[in-house]
Length: 217
Length: 230
Image (cartoon, rainbow over all chains, first blue to last red):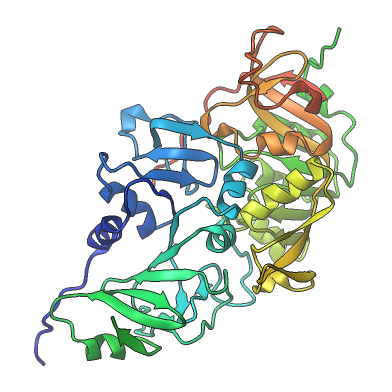
């Protein structure tokens, strides 16, 4: 068997790839997992304002162990810092801000994304014993843009990019772009449009790993 | 003279009745009124409806209240927190009702109660399984669902500084659900880390005006516990 001619992005490279596309001036919320790592790759001189659902606007990176403020955690319960210019707000103001359409971007993890932009990221079955929604439904329905960062396939090799989601939905028609370890794919008028892909990976190989029709940009 | 301070947690909670809806503020261990939650466990009220961001973590606080069989129903956004074993045991035995609410809708349903608004339409959850049984309407071409206000009989709140009128200031991310819950209950009980003289808090910086607060108790709880870092 021929060695594959491409190397998938690791978590750090994937986070850096997303960060590359976030312009100065945006207000951005980062979900749990790889999305949280995105913040580490936006250079400090590019002024991006990170929001956390628990009422922080202008969140900075994780502190060193000796600089932890026990009163300052993000929505994933991790210790964070403030950058100069930051402010606090209550939970109700924090989500009014999101639903009011002032959040430029939310980067979320997902189980599945459909070609119509439907997002499934909170439950893998209808009878989940203890479901955990957190703020995902508010963020997905309220943000101006939702970008998803996820692995292109499940551990069993099943596609996560589908014609229609099979897991319970978080929000309808909200995803604008998907970043995977293989490609960057826009959701445009009900179609997956490949915007960028790994060097060496062929379009046919990418299509074979995807559960809906891809179009080349 | 208005003085809302009482001498002890037990005194603050003495008349909480069985069957009450209790709003419990805090986000993870930060801004959580732990002394009041522990006091409620001691106090003995049962058949409670507890409204909190999670179903509790590990075996402390809200989780312990649930584990002791005192909660009839939990309304939360996140039922699966780190080591939420007590909730899962009680839920598996069918001894507690669970209502899952998206976190922003949880805050807004409480805010609606505070503002005298019985229900409101929102796009959050529209088209998902959480929309089942809820009235849907289309405004400007988008579907919204009707969500009802959550009224508290009691709110448990933690402040950083409070004066005897009940004016409150919070600390860092300890603000979270505290101001909105403080405004949405018939009886708002506050534990405060520090006591300020009346007039010492800058009116421009007070987050919760004293008019929302009924009782205060001074609990110098110190910093929230340091959790194992992820």
